[in-house]
Length: 275
Image (cartoon, rainbow, N blue to C red):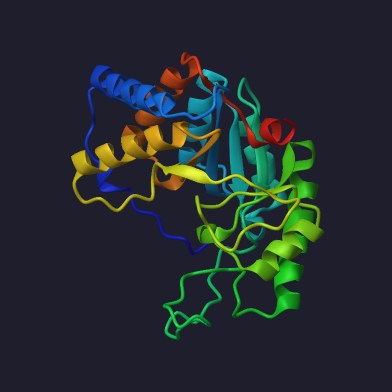
């Protein structure tokens, strides 16, 4: 496991709970007022880079259990072992429905970042991108699915989240052919998913934020939340390794607000897929 984590500036300063709830409620109201459809907005929470049942992972699960709110955990298969999976399943047992799905294979970059891409633009990190041999990409996609199905059994769902929220068209075709029902990436990610492969984007990013000013970061986050809730399905991305106590308090407040909000349904990807 070589992914590094740093807590965003947004989460380094505690906030008043009452005022925080008020600001979240305002963002939710604004978002729902912008909806073009009368149906409820379905909200799912996607936690990336899950593998080790450590203290921060336990804290994240505990917040969702407190509210009996579903959580979708994206597990990097090469990091998963039978012992770790057993620990995660033990933590997942409780009021909340926690499902596990595939997050790449090893979460490593294979793109030569020092070289321009085929389009002449700067390359970005990608595990399943154009620089890799097609057979190797498909092999990693297949064995990742096989490993997690074995380790998580009925708690596994056939959803694929690519590391860094990106992969190429070739990988998307393989993902569909291997039996995945959906992919989850950033909003507007390209290339488009092939027909028959649902695409559930994350519209709100809680923890990989770059604002240096905490107040500016909160403003931007709440605006993302409002814009996300204006859509039929709103994905919210978490990273438990970046979730300190302040960030956990925000998630707790957010779940509290959403649970009591008419017009919003907190649903896991399993439930959204079965609509």
